[in-house]
Length: 198
Image (cartoon, rainbow, N blue to C red):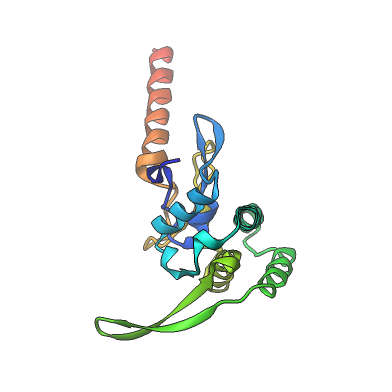
């Protein structure tokens, strides 16, 4: 899958990760088919540089195991998002499961120089890859407002986003992707109904 097929409209790493599946012509479509796709996705998300270790030394079986664990967590996170959108609360069982998973991994901070000073950055050994996704989800869920996590209002779309607009009135994953389509469709049906009534 080419990188250009990835969707980054969620306003957070966690929502963009859940959006690594999308509907294409009515079919739920996987965008992460392989370990290589996951690495490309991480590169596009801006997080590839926090993964350390020699990728080439990682056995194929371990890569597959880490890949499957990461995608399994995405499924759980998506279900949690669905519940949050419907009930405006993080599911208690999801929190317990996330805490359990977090306890199995480790990561570490490093001080990094930048133009106007220094900052800290968290790093993950390649063997600890799921920790990145788990920790990003935990950070998101401890800082977000449940009312601002939304699912696109196009009923054919499965994408989520975190609404950071001034009035929290965002309705679509993006105007280009769904907003304009829905508006054009509504206009067509209004025009068609008016024509049939005349």
